[in-house]
Length: 207
Ligand code: 3NM
Image (cartoon, rainbow, N blue to C red; front, side, top):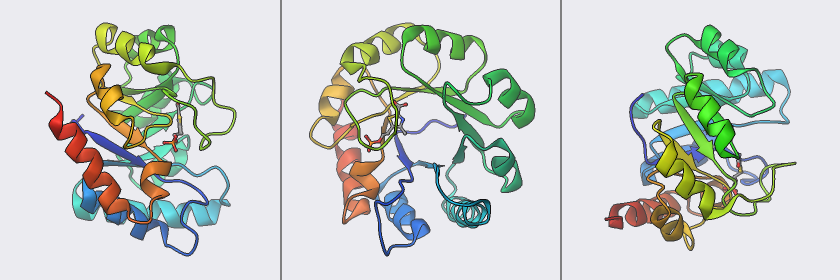
């Protein structure tokens, strides 16, 4: 897959009154170079409408579009890939259905990361690095130690996620992350473009 640095995930209830695609367009303008549609609450029709609008948006900007969990939806809107949780569809089944498209998976322990790599994931999420309010029933924070471990032992791309903010991004990068993912710090911001620019400045400083 094409590499990326700043992974923006949609949030629910973070942008009242703002259209989802407009918020994500601001994120892209600021430097987000991959977008995931994560939606746990919309009804199917609303979910399809949002997914279509984000597909159109990401295509216009030429960046990958990933759908969380819903393989049918990913295929229906011709997304570039799907992102799985540990409790979702098994990775091998997702691979079968997605073919050469991107399949990513969240991991919270090195055993999960090694298995994902062995099973052919294109990338993994590594987290939650810090406590997060954004994901319900997420495991306890894994801390920077997990980022260090993944950076040393995993060969496929990994993106750090969970409680990543502008004020702690430097520490996450120092632990070995070269790709960051944030939900609330981007879509919860009054100015998602500026939040992304600030993340990119931090990523640029690295090294
Ligand atoms: N996945 P925020 S943490 C969607 O650890 C998600 O797998 C996680 O939101 C994982 O940037 C998380 O607002 C939520 O903390 C991240």
